[in-house]
Amino acid sequence: MIVLVADIVWSRVAFMSFMYGKSWFFFTLLVFITSQSVLEHINHGEETEAQRIAIFACRAFIYVLSMPQLVYYHARQSVLSYRRGETIKILRLIPFPSYLRQWQEAADCLLAVSIVVMLYLEPILHCWAYQDGKFAYELCTEKEDLRYSYTVFTMFAMFLYYVLLIDLTVVSTRISAFSLVCVRMLSEVALFISALFVAVLTWSCAVSVLKQDNEDFAGIHKGAYTLLRMFMGMYDSKKYEVLHKDPIAELMVFVFCIITVIFFLNMLIAQLSCAYSAVYVDMVGYARLERAETIVEIVPSVPKKRWTSFVESLRLKKRLEFNQGDIGVAGGIQMREAANINPTTIDMIKRFGGSTSPEIQ
Image (cartoon, rainbow, N blue to C red):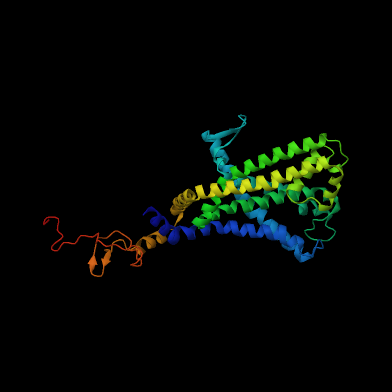
């Protein structure tokens, strides 16, 4: 019954309000992608005036309309948290607002910081005095050293934009359950990475002790990098021929590949398969709970007129009809299903003739 109510409220009321609330974020993301990943690479570095104007307009939109909202929201939340004493200490030294415990809030705060740093490093502003008659020119050689730092923070901002899109998984229970399962699988992946790290460190230390002339194993750091490339299939196949000169080193590499590529990878697949089958059913329930939580947060923002129209469309005052002419009580929602889905040989409804007055039992 709870699942039915949640699905009805979500499909008829909360879904549209949720998507409407995310529409501004969508539009901001599209503008950000256009300015940083599309317009920048249209003419392969030879920017036209129209292209520069479009880039300037998109970045101005981000800095003027999107950034102030993010900064104001997190500044207000931080001030309220510090006033109320709602803080958490990182490394028992630095107090941070407690609302940042939620990863969405923390990612949103990092996004705001990244955009502020982008504004500080904006190449168009730093090259304003070196435009040479080109409006919104950003490729001036005088400030070339700032472009790399700017692109790094732009990369972080782009990554955080897409990370925040994970909230949209609530639209589909199946996708939401899959995302929750992926989070639970991270512990298994962490175990695999830890085992791989120990194996790489062990073999790189062992081969570095061996008396050999292979430059790829001249030291622990080079040996670890080489073994990692072998594991990922990125090592040049021609370089394997050099190992024939040293049978011991070749044997060590052979054993390493067997343990990591064959044993560790298959062990990871087995771990993920068993863990997935064990937790997926529970994750469907958690996904429904997450959707219910989203509904609770959205319903107060639904317009009263729309909510009243939704309640009236349920027709809760109408009596339910069990069979044709068999009228029951009101206050429910009529759900129809095929007669062959749940066959019953015994009629579960007891019918009595006469008046239904409680005074005449």
